[in-house]
Length: 570
Image 1 (cartoon, rainbow, N blue to C red):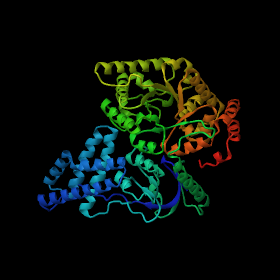
Image 2: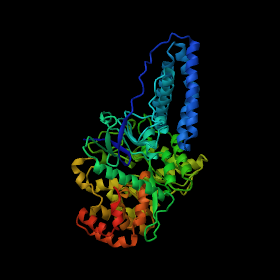
Image 3: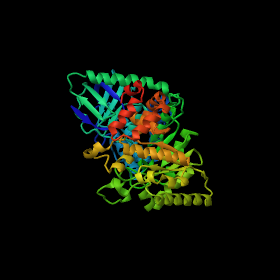
Image 4: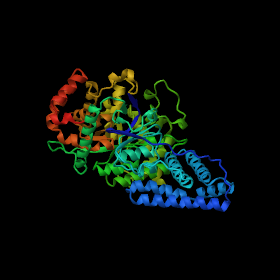
């Protein structure tokens, strides 16, 4: 049998399940027979003890993990929380109800801000308060700090400190019924390289202590088989490959014939930059800022964005940080923008089209990016440019922001590089006309495919058209690379094609020398590059462009690849 979810971190694991029971349910309206002083003593003693426990835990963690713990400790000491605690004590509530009601008030305030980061803090507040309540009542808080054997954790939801304090050596995978790709737990799981699925509706149907096969590359869980021989082979191969990949952390991406290749990361939040630096990647080729606008009731302010971009730039040091302006629309909905319902949102009002219509919204982001450029190696990139008129309008708004900051005497980098995404075929065709106004290009293979074939990439009925080895797409990519060479523009690719073994080889054969992939694919991308003889692939690249079908192009390419390249686990 199979169930599915949304993959967060890739991996293949065959292991027993450990179903984590949920946090105990408490009666928030329970009153106490104790005096106010007795209740106050119990509550503040528990707060103090949990705060000390969190402090000891933080000492054992890396810097960014410790930061999450310190957030909770700080919350427990803030006046607004302690005032609520005193209020509910005076109302005669039981000690555990006092803490949970006070925390609930703070959660609601944080969620009401509409800010994604504040919403994550609400999760931290809930986590800390339940720990205190369990200490007061003597109930067991769900604990995975000591796992007796390797397990795949099955849970309705997982709170940050649960994962931070987990026995990571025996935590082989996570399957969550709830959760999103961008939650704190998802980001932590990815940074720990734990194969993880979230938003898996049938997760809690999985039996406890039973063998299952988690393939978080495909977003699948298989269970109930009589034999797992094939799954065990896949898991063993994946584990061995993963261990070997650590050797590439400190190695540059240099092809077999000595050509240096730039390997960058696609990110959604600065916290994953520790992993980017650990893997020795060359910077960030795509910061997906649209996630800063989602799951909130109002857009992020200039100051909010500035703080996030600065953190990212500082973590990277001199390495480049390419910030893509918000790519809202399509499958990324933002209710507060009041966007119209559309029959085909991928082909409609999205990305740069929204920005050029809501100029104040756009300028707020551009000002934040410019201000952050004063402290780091920052580049800005416009998504879904289809015409030169759109590019010129975006550049005019950027120039307005420069002039405003100059008048306000706010520092920024006047020569901050500007680029565009080539993901609409018209941008590739007209690139020579746009080239003199930009400094770099990044090919977005995901959207380029769906717009080339007029095939919604989320629609299974037309999935057969979504093939990056089709000569039409290869020709558009080749044309883009050649124009960039002629016009002396930097050119990279930041779509999923670069994270695929055949896709990476095809792009290399077409002359691309800069790739941006998910951080979790950074090391395997380096390994693949070091096996490729790029000079010998050029002939295959020319033949691929003359192929009639995707299958023919793939055959031509595979014949030019070394045998060991094709045995990589996919």
